[in-house]
Length: 207
Image (cartoon, rainbow, N blue to C red; front, side):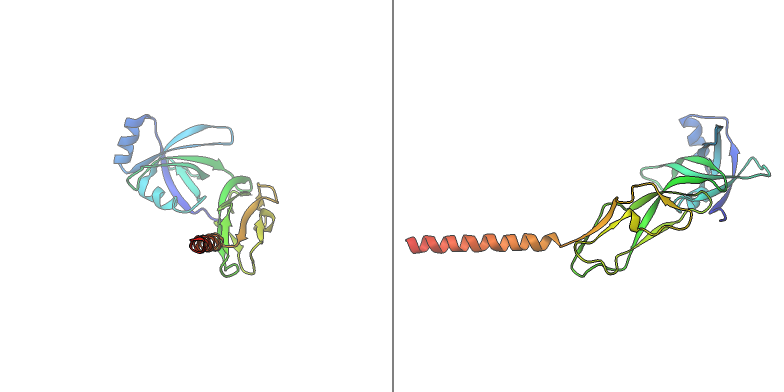
């Protein structure tokens, strides 16, 4: 699988909040690259290209450092975002190699519809998996078609691509299909109203 984005980076020697602010004003994003027992490398990434690349979950980045001939592959481990502006303040990158497996969270995509009138309760919205670093699925589909009230979907029911394995136990609950709570509340309310009406009629008869 090809990288999701190719970025050119430069090493940086100035650190601290002041240096990071200057870097962002110049159109760059501070980052640190680590992994495989190497010393952390502090980088400056092109801000706009990085922002666009990181819109893809678990994006695989091919990074050329200081114009080197041999780019490295990296996955995003942590992103620090500005709480107000659409700006990435800092990125932690994990160095990876083709062929190795990495642990990532992959979004679960629900397709189809369960029994009409049922309520689908999500226990998991994403699944932690071990996947090849160069072939991480963007999402995992879970079909609701044919499910009726009382049914459950477990981790073992989620279809995984070849080479991908779930980290969670096979019997971990992903979702369940339940009867709507509203109906139960309505029935209880109607029952209470009926009891109140009967009590009122009894009081009138006693008078």
